[in-house]
Image (cartoon, rainbow, N blue to C red; front, side, top):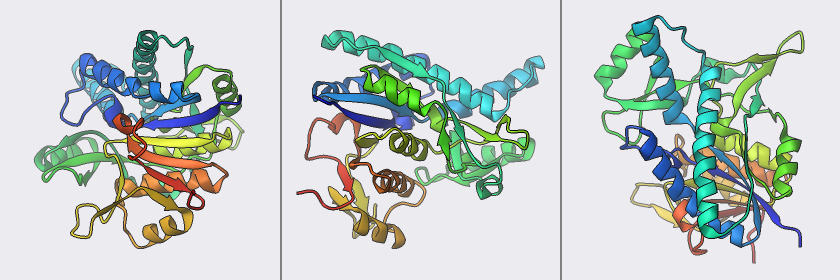
Length: 319
């Protein structure tokens, strides 16, 4: 029997809740809780590739960089190296907790983490219009101070009344390095953790050399691209809500369990999804099914096993 291959993109809350400081104990517990919810898919016969966000973590790493530079004159690392740093550390936490969860469940599976570079266009307009939120949420007075001291750009957070987060460039992912290897290893039965934080952004220069790009790629778009390039059957975005809602937090709010491409395109055009939150996830799901994927699902990790939860997006409505 050919097993189905699924790519699961874990949201930032898979490792760090919004009200937490980011201690290793907090991240380990959150990761373990998330991994336990994936056992259902393994028992259903899926092979898995896990991707993850890094917004809070990469922001914290950059703050540690700045503190080390100020206090001890240590050289600060550029953003691409901080992304790589977060990719490795988060993958390690996920991998270790997943191994323990697999042992507890009596499932024999290897787990492998792959540091992943993702190609972007250095002339992408996103470099002139930073939109990707990283790091913690600050009150406006602190955000203004950091903007003046460091030249950082902040935008209002939709989740907190007096909340502001730093934003950086988020170019469109064009290609996933080592995609064939990632797909082959996963189809061979190993759970692969890859493209963490949207991947390490790189571009090809005039000498045909791989060069770093100062950006953070949207993890949902990068994950959907990976899923498409390796021919995955299904693509999941695990976030902090069990459904997609039309007109979220408005009097006309309603949840949707099934969407097809035509209706989803129209809802996007009409602004029915939150532009800074849900709309990018919807676009990633559409990208996957437009390139041949069978089904995209947006749901909460704890609801995976209960089929009445989750918004399923397909090319046409399924019978």
